[in-house]
Figure (tube, rainbow, N blue to C red):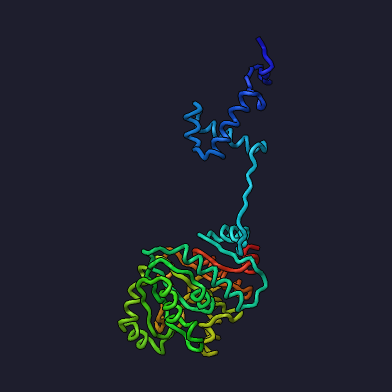
Length: 330
């Protein structure tokens, strides 16, 4: 007997089809989606209880969504973070996290203050008591240290010497001390310049007990927090501490950015320089080996420098502003 549920195919064969709006189908559909969305049950548990396969449960769920029987609405709390730009930037560069400050066109110092506060929250979420975190230096990290919430009792390590011509609160030793005060764990800090007068002096400094203890921690870091300095245009505290002749030489070598004492070109590659053996800092190789490197950098003038750091794989998490994020994602 032919029924209304039989469908004649072009090849003459017949196939039985259950109507999508049939009462049995609709009741079963309602059972599945109620238990999955409201009850929070797994697909496997629903399948076992209703006597069907997990794949059939999945098809019921997909059908409910596609037919508009279930509407999914995402409602996030108000936040200073641009969530869409953050995700676009993360996907564009394959980052672990991208955190984009929603505000645009902020004056430089206020932008650093806002970025520093967000970076402090990111750091607090990232660390635990077993973390060994390396801290670089810079104006934004100075703001971060000021706004930092309490941290787990982790170990805090200074990863580079200081530069001349900057305020004491911006220098690496003081920033590290203030971050460590929020954690209450071990701290490894030292007084030394980022660039020593010559290689012999650099080696002598590295034998100093305080410096040596810090350097020993570089290969053990689980996290590092750095800034990115721009050399074109000149928005680098490191570059501003050098003599003009040396800056000109480094620009001719192709330097566009610095990251915790490492100099890179526009493709994110390390550049060998005449003063590499004079540096008192974590090496580029050591920094790249750190599992989580959080870079805090904003301002539209730093777009090329930040881009170089991202494509070079120096960073796993970026904290920046919407102006930069839009330029990088475009």
